[in-house]
Length: 243
Length: 296
Ligand SMILES: Nc1ncnc2c1ncn2[C@@H]1O[C@H](COP(=O)(O)OP(=O)(O)OP(=O)(O)O)[C@@H](O)[C@H]1O
Ligand SMILES: [Mg+2]
Image (cartoon, rainbow over all chains, first blue to last red; front, top):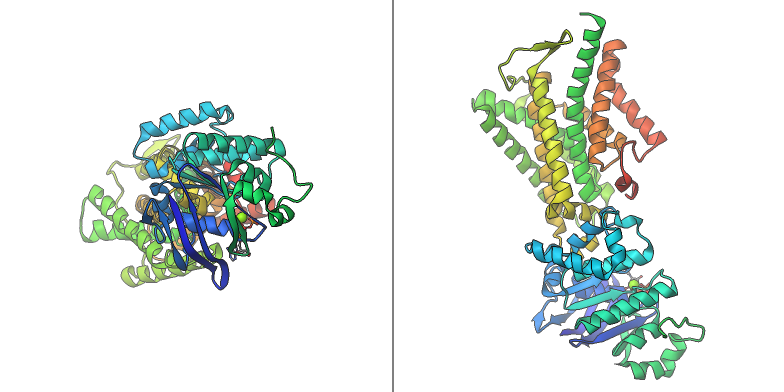
């Protein structure tokens, strides 16, 4: 459903993405791993239209979305749960969810139904409905950020380091939510520092290093790859996705 | 006039000018809430409101409702142009740059007003022909009631807009995080434009209702802007209810001070209050939790 062909992105003169090609098929969980500063966030922002690539093309369901503004890309069905959650901290939880549905604001009834469904699925949000989002804990904010993204009815849901700053127990919760979303038929692109956890729930993965994809393959292959084991799955890495 | 009558008189005058400061403060807050920019041309919108209304009623002899509507439209268009021509084209501008631009724009507006209307103050007829009446032996101009009534309506409409409409909430979301807003599909530029339009409209309304009481001249904007800024700082930048309460308090202090101390110090009051607030509690005194989550 999503195709990137040799995408180059710059920050002024900094060459942040150096010809990225990747694809995500419908129903997959694809993970993207890489060290700090590898360009993961840049890649996701490029897909969502927050930054424009200088070269290359991005296709979604066969349509060229390379030069569409971010607003149009959400409407096509791509939602990002951004790094650091970026909830609207000065708005209520409810208003945050409503903003998630901004691209489909014409359908007020559907919006109400969606909020109802999400809050019965995540009761913690229901209790906090009228609280300002900035007063929520980190885990609650992450749940809110995910629900806010779901309000747009995305076909492709992109996560940027959803476990950042969360305890192992909460991380596990969030990963369960992600797996649940895939079971509902959503497609997921997941960026994680916690490579082992990510590879355990994903179907395929890409490894990004200084703006280039240096490895790709199904998760079996990556988990057993010597280089990956050394660089990203080093001993002592916390195991959060084990039952 | 006995002592009570005098006190009542000062209080009423204070509340009336306070309402105008509140409106100017609201104008600051709307743009600040969406962009984190302090629009120092806010006072100029008030001046233009008064002067354009003078043109509509005294020169074109239009009726009050028609003149009111056209004046607000004209000033609103100027607000929109200000955003389109001076704010929006600046790429990756930081807040400070934009604030300086608003100062430049205020100077341009003032210069234009002087070219068109000259340096003389202008008067407008009161909205209703009713004669002044007395309350506790104090004399009340019916226009003061218009000022208070219209301010109340503006405040109520604004609160409803920001609390209950998708557009209103989206504007607040933009201030919070423009990037996240874009991810939700909120057109940030349009929201900024709406904030300038709203602020200009409110400024125009303030200018139209106050001119029959206090006259209007081309260079009144700076002082009005300063006092409105005092109101929005005292009330907590970005807080609507805060700006209203603070505007009224500022107007009251000013009027009481002018009455009992000396009218010479009147204009210094706003400045002193402003400085005190910035020294003691920069987040303002009447803001809720919302404001404390803001960046500054
Ligand atoms: N706004 C920016 N302006 C200039 N350079 C930037 C900007 N954002 C990121 N970079 C640079 O681009 C490169 C990639 O950054 P990016 O944030 O995409 O990395 P990342 O893989 O997401 O890292 P992390 O794991 O820390 O989130 C880095 O070298 C970074 O310094
Ligand atoms: Mg990142």
